[in-house]
Image 1 (cartoon, rainbow, N blue to C red):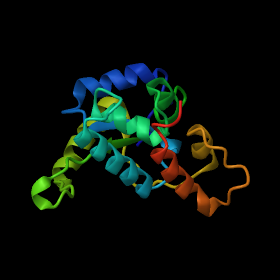
Image 2 (image 1 turned 45 degrees about the vertical axis):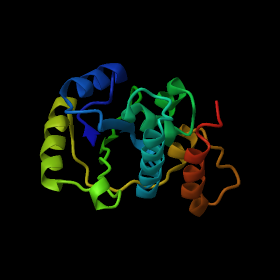
Image 3 (image 1 turned 135 degrees about the vertical axis):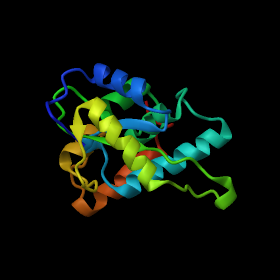
Image 4 (image 1 turned 30 degrees about the horizontal axis):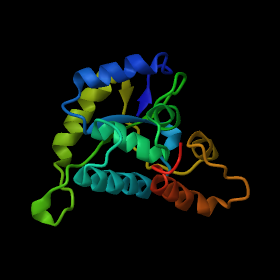
Length: 171
């Protein structure tokens, strides 16, 4: 999503989301911090496993997802790396799917219903939909705390996937 104005106060923006979202499955991510759809799915799969095993660090699935995406054990660092920052003009409004056991553990979704809920949230958050897919950027890699020096562009996504895997090993 793109905001009408650059974000002045990320905590106020988060409070608005918390007030108007239906549940903890909706969250905002810093725009450059998402490098691909595989990056999002890998974080979701790791979240699902930790939730099933009772091994989440965060109290909520939204915070745990942010933490895993950021590749850290520390919530403060997770918000710095993968959250929305002051001055950001864009963010990702994400709806984490619910795991549906009756269909083999794969998520199902009501796309039209989600689009309507997302549209309402865009209004509350002061933004509008940008029909884009995430791509790795140097800014995103650096924001996630990854040293990309010497890495080829085509390695960035794989490094970000590994970053999720070591989230509980890092400080």
